[in-house]
Image (cartoon, rainbow, N blue to C red):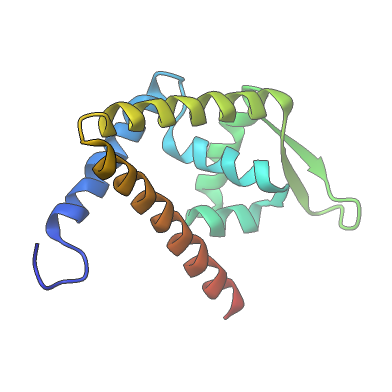
Length: 146
């Protein structure tokens, strides 16, 4: 460990975890971006601009991403009741089921990985991931407030 707040090993772990996520989701025929989109839409419906900002992608990239999920029946585009030019994206029942399956697959894969550690370390690592989520959400909220 170095004097830096985050070690090189921690940074490498994030890169390797991203690959683990990619491989786990690929077994369900989902990409990480598709999974993130489903997770966001599970929270609430959103317009394309908001989704592009959340995913940090361009509008054309978002359109391609959504098109694939619409074709699979996971996302539904609905005209906005107040603005006919605006479209709201909602997760469908099939999308909810796909997101739930993905959640379970990722949880099981992480549990399998953490199973190679002693119980207190595994619990600490899982808690560390939860803290990372809290930091990401706090950072997102702070950016939205500015």
